[in-house]
Image 1 (tube, rainbow, N blue to C red):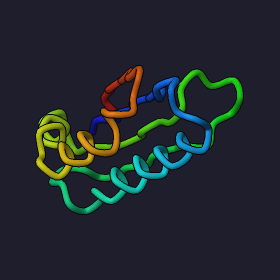
Image 2 (cartoon, rainbow, N blue to C red):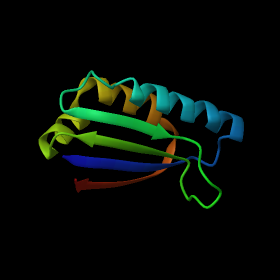
Image 3 (cartoon, one colour):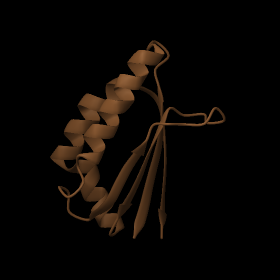
Length: 100
């Protein structure tokens, strides 16, 4: 299995209220992919961070294999969420994938 983790930092131009709405949209969009993409075992977006955090939100997902992760990244359902709910609002994206 493969754990896929992403941490996003939102653009500075957004107010805290706007950031809360954006994070809610990211969470709803990505978690809404559960059960819809082959090989995706679990997906969770964490939006409530401690003050010690350097990012605004985090994706924590689990896939059956590296191939399933690759399929997810190009799946039209994921691409739609990424292009409408995530990419337009993100300043920094960091990812870490590892075998479990």
